[in-house]
Length: 330
Image 1 (cartoon, rainbow, N blue to C red):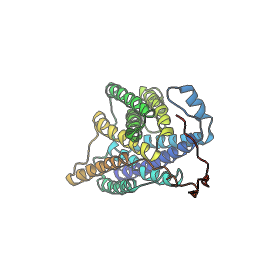
Image 2: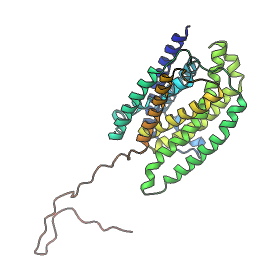
Image 3: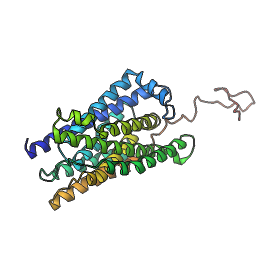
Image 4: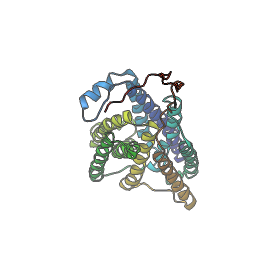
């Protein structure tokens, strides 16, 4: 397969992976709304609850299919091509959240959609078959050195966001973005291990790489980090708007793996100046879209009627006609 064919195939597979991922997120959100409260602190209860739901399992399988396609895509093109495409799935997510989950989209959300569309156009124009080749080597020690402080930071952020759930006030709207950063960092670590698995697929081929993949530490690092991320993510998804949590998580994950993974695996940005500028503009545009989402106000509660029924005052001293008054108790 030629360089251009690899590039086209990698982009198309990334798009399909993105669709599978975000459809899976929305299906899981639907299922979690019908399940009892789950939390990462109660691992057995969480796993028993979600795996007993056929709807949740359908979303989980859809996401696993997206992960498998992501491995294939990363074996064909570089991280800086695949990850922004994966992040662009917020378009799919926002539309599905609006149609299926009935989550209201405000001006910021629609502005974020427009920014993503422009960013994807910039990235598509920046594609370069000469430089967008996937890196095939990465040291496991480097991954571990990057992963340890990242996981510690992710856990601290998750616990901070979880405490906001028990607080009232203006800071509660920060919960979903903080949950998103926390889970995004964990999924970023998992994405590094996924890239390492993809590098083995690139070197040996899909079938011949199976013994190498099954015998490597990268596969089990990917499973461990993705599993831990899933526990925290399900907790966050049940407590947050999917249209805020998922985009923030996706972009943080992608930004992390592009910045760290490109260094570890020795991948290069486009050599042409104007293509490099477009790549940077595209990536920054995706990040800007997440900032718009993070600052968006939470969906408003339905407004209460000022009066539930008309009240007629009797100036002669009789009781007013209308709904009976209820005395409030402390």
